[in-house]
Image (tube, rainbow, N blue to C red; front, side, top):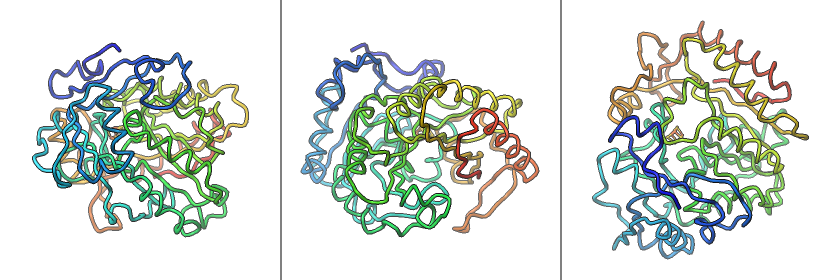
Length: 389
Ligand code: SF4
């Protein structure tokens, strides 16, 4: 195992964006941590939390104990808590982002939520993410310090799903998308692939949906590229893996996440393994040369997927927006970030929950939509556009 302190982009910003990753030969250091083909020659970067806190209830689940074992094998400090309450959590951004808490999802956390326009339902395997994207949507969604919480009680989480089959309002009742079945999204509050080497829960969910003879589909999106453990799973086409990608100039906002090139290689690998795949182009930014930048992105995707037969590819195009809360939180996490969040250049909209969000003005939105959709059709004519927002 070769230790490397931080991502190259993080190292360019000493102190503030520090995080610890390792380069680990997949067939040596990770053997025994996750079950995957032993002859894998791919080098992968893995996030290693410093403290790993585990609650008594989480430790009682086999999954909780397995996570502790994997983290300890990677060199994390394990802290066994005496109660299920998480107290004394680090407030500092850097310390929080290197902390993993293994807990159980309470009944209210396990309750499915509608999540249009992405999917019928959302369920959560974890909350938080070890990457450092300066536009991260989690800033407006999660409360408290940005530690990563992973849930150990996966059987209880999955037990909520069957009752929702046929009940959703996005794919279940759509003439265009009914073929996807009832869709369950598990990447709303985390990037599940970023912590998969510790949890193993994505693989378990993919196998669960593969063995579940129901009109249902699992969906997740990721900025990470460590897909090797997923390639040999019996997925039966019931999991759509989408990659969150952006124009090259946006990579400066994505500290701690693998480069787009690596994500596109992972996209090709999972598509070749027969998974339905997708592009989550987000957040679309009004870059100085945005039209060319996004056209280049779609051209690069076409090159990455060239020659693959039976490709099932979707695209979701999501423009940048922010709320007063997310702007305030991001300003504390990433002071000095060059990300544009200027209300004077945006249009004010009300969400369905009665809160304010700032989006691109209508004329810009229309111009960008027409341009990007034309680029998508030109480079990826077989891609199915699910929505623009
Ligand atoms: Fe947030 Fe996604 Fe970046 Fe993680 S990878 S920090 S969830 S935007």
